[in-house]
Image 1: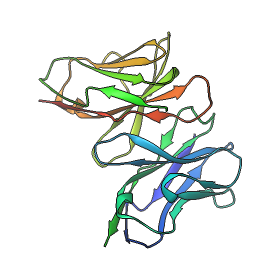
Image 2: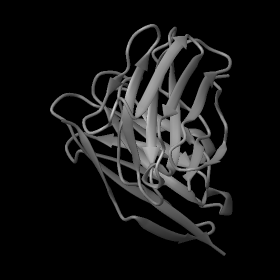
Image 3: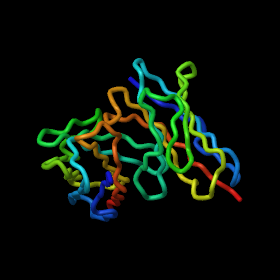
Image 4: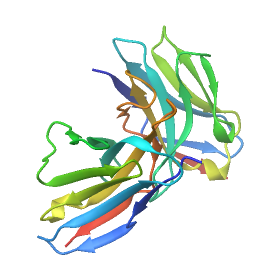
Length: 114
Length: 116
């Protein structure tokens, strides 16, 4: 079975600083990987997805993630944090297709300080 | 595009009553919808996969008689929490897959259920 591990349940950065949220996956077959963002009391919004094309994936709001098979990682980055980036971020994996069953990580809460 | 709505966004009910939550895909047809449950400060746990016109597939440990799912049309799936109890209080989120594309799931805004 596939799984994802998000290192760090809480990450705090200063506004303007680099954002790095870590995600490692486990899968016996090539995975599809996703990052979602959740604002308080809201559903999830897709930030970006990896579907076996380019290993560097660019998403919305300036976020990007790089798929590294050798490290089984799919870390999310943003060069410069903005206050509006404060939210909960979830990494997810699917092994049977981009629209099939997702397995979510435990989430990382991003705090952005002045 | 790809908007999923849920209704209601908030519901408070007495223990023992049943609550129905609707999930609609507003601008696309969804052959498959998913229902998730999220406890405070935790991740999403998949409860069931709902396919239009057929019975839902429940994840291990989810009581199918407790959480009734109906996917009667390509734009609507409903989750009914029967005889709700305080431990059923949670944030319920649905998602839908566009039948045409092979894109990702699109998530609804969630429904917060509080059972007194």
